[in-house]
Length: 173
Image (tube, rainbow, N blue to C red):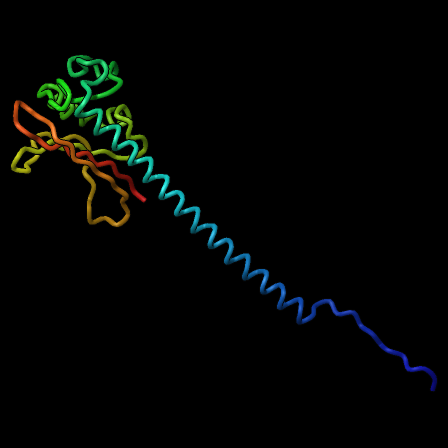
């Protein structure tokens, strides 16, 4: 017999390729899961910042501004571009509070006019005993775990009496 012949066969799939592909696939799955988690956290944080910005603007407008126009409570809803409640700085107007409370039927239009954006809005004016004197909007369910919310309390005068204006801005997750 002469020279030994080697019968070499090409392997299409080797154990090393399967192991390398498994590591690559695992790394991709970990990367995608991390990416999704970071994106969701960024979205939640951006939504909270937007709600906080809206909250500050709305609470300032309510107790410091008469609204635009200043006599919006006597004109058509379409003519109002902001809904301030102040007769003067930190002193609320009974007529404006009554007018705002009567606008609950036009909630979405007023909410957007106040700058709440996609968030829901609840405003309550509470007397010294904590009871609600006037309210506007939709209060959120504090037990519901699927709600993001921010709130602020502002002090103001109403007919010479100290009241607390509570503003809540909230949305579903």
